[in-house]
Image (tube, rainbow, N blue to C red; front, side, top):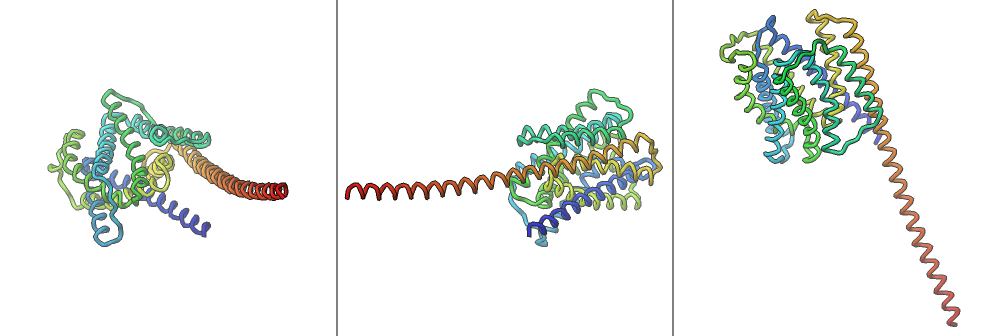
Length: 349
């Protein structure tokens, strides 16, 4: 039974990662066509994210009404706090991309891995083995080599990048901690937070986007092609959001960040295949190092899990042995007392 459950769990884990990678890469490609000047020029990223969460909230509402998912109680103030952090992450990333060079934007995204490690150590006293640390360094170096080009930064851009990195890291850690704290499933948690994010982003999104690109949403000339890609983007976003919560609930925020860079490699490859992006020897070398780092990380995590299982097994055996020793001591003390009673009886006789 344990072997079968382990196999089922492994299949579910692979399925969650697969869904996240496919939906995320598909979402990036769709948004690239929707937002690029050569595509439909829909430069309203924050508002589009609000549309994403609106559709996600509707899917959650229908699922709850149909009885496909159960609704568990989570205090509203925790949902509100989480939604504020998540919205800060989205807005901070958009402003960071606008104010900084692409190179510094990529560096700020790479810094999330060590930031998540430090925050988990501070908040949850979590420690990492040497193998895991080594793998994280290899992944960061590999992705950095293949993505970072020019690095320019200014004071405003640096502040926005710091806000984006800290809020995104805190959001991803909070997903896992909220699921454990309230024993709530990933989709149920998403269904509770999505409406709050949808309302706030749809209302504030047009003004945030105006500050980013000096264009107002209601002046955009919506075509059938743009509408199709908006709906496709929203559909992919539902799968992307659900799979993100699934992955972080099953693994950890660090694992999600490390293996999530596989999406960066896939985006680079698809950009070269579909959009005639340049693929240099530097890109290929960086992608190869990143993939090696991800393989090493997976191995290191398995080694760490095995150590934990072995230590639990050893402690369990020690507990059994100590219990047996206690029973033997009790039995021996009982025999000794019986012998003493007999001896005393003989002396009295």
